[in-house]
Image 1: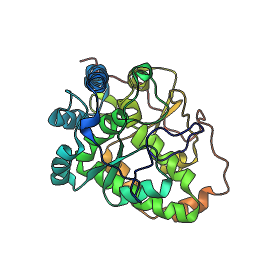
Image 2: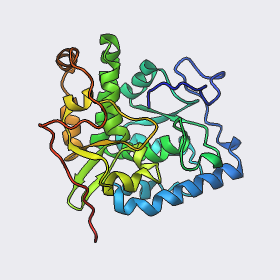
Image 3: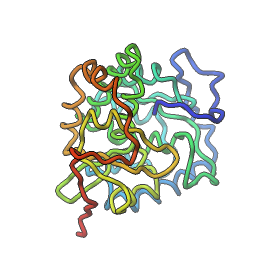
Image 4: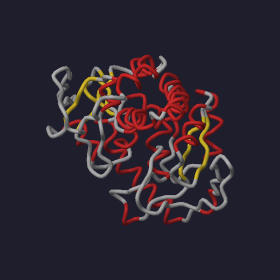
Length: 282
């Protein structure tokens, strides 16, 4: 995900290309790193049937990369056939414009380094487990894949209009921390939730956070938390709603929101449509 951090960036940026891509160098991963990947994968796999959306579960099962850190070059032919996307290896967090340019050209940046065992439960920056496990399976869904391309194209325009912060909020509350209503109850499709052992059950079952029906302008006004579980989640009906809401030109939206104060992460408005924590017990 695009973003900034106050601490020194992880990853080796010295050998990157002008577009910030690097070689994955899969052979350099150690047996201990592959073992850590398996531990992370197994923890999340146990939780997914109860909390993840069906599209994610089905894609994950088809990919089957439980044995160790996946080779990007082995996944890309499958991804290209499915949705014309490919993943590119990057050293870590990217500048906004670089990130948007990759998405606009159906390239998803995936960080090459893996967290340490001490960071098993929490990591400040996205690593290869977050980026690959959390994001790549849904790139196989055609509607979601088209939404991400449109998001990247919109990001380039937002960058020119000085509206990056508004678009970053949209990314955060959908791609990273979005919920979706399904016949079986609420499920998640957000990568930040799907790759987190703690937030996955919290996002669906806890009574603490607000869950609000998807509202594009509301989301673009709402601040978010980067160092705690989210205080608010936004719920889409399906991926088609997400794509159709973000397809039009956002320029009028930016103008309409420019004079409004951002909303706190836990704000509740009279127009909000509250959605309860629902889980299918079957």
